Image 1 (cartoon, rainbow, N blue to C red):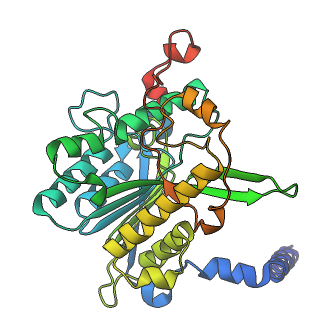
Image 2 (tube, rainbow, N blue to C red):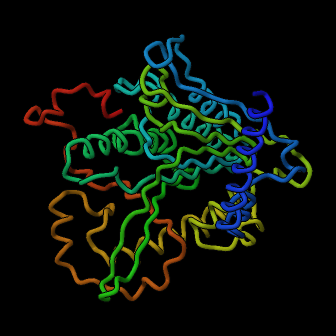
Length: 362
């Protein structure tokens, strides 16, 4: 019986090995590229430290509340020397004592770090990439509610990040320090029609100085950060290499930026990630040019000059001009900071969502 069991186990191992060989042959070079393109080399990996982070609570895991993901975000931002890069599906946070129903403090950490940089007149850049608008129909109540809270976080009202910075430093150009972006693609259909759609950002990523990276399932909102609501998991990866710069995290970031901005990695590598050459001439200039091309070709896409739903409707009758589309580089566009800013986007009591807790949207 023992011999038979051993033979069966050996045969199972052989079948598994054969199956893996078939998979590898089928995937071929693509599999190798996928496994190695962003993987750290042995020389790089020895400098990396990885910590598992969680948002958990009594209801989700039967344990005391843990919000180590938020703590990692706050620490990475507070200790950043020259730049912070954020990609996230949502951006809903608040300042301390702002009186808002939002309680996570990612926004407070960004505000304090930016205040320090502006006060000391030191170079510091924050790049934030978000969806141009929440997923779903813009007319839907949940989408409008999320857009409201996100706008209040970024630039609407005295407790928003951009307004708070501008009020504190009235002679400062805040966009010299922090900018918000979206991603958009376009194509020509077989019938010759032009079409476009936003690239919906679903990642949850923070990189600080190519020294720290936090990546996982947590959005920047209370649902993900507070620990007593949604359960989340993330990794905090730190790179302690000091010779020749930081290796693995830097290479990962450069690949992402190359894709978004549409320039070769080699061009990005020539400059410091917080430099004017990267921040102004690549991120801001490319986003501005791409935004202009898309607005001429598709006048109805979300834009800052669409302050009302009526403005969006009126834009559909405008003539489309596709002449600038060939000049589009990469996918980055400007985030429409003033999109629907004249609309009241909060749920009304005439809708069922008006009777729900604000926690549902934050």
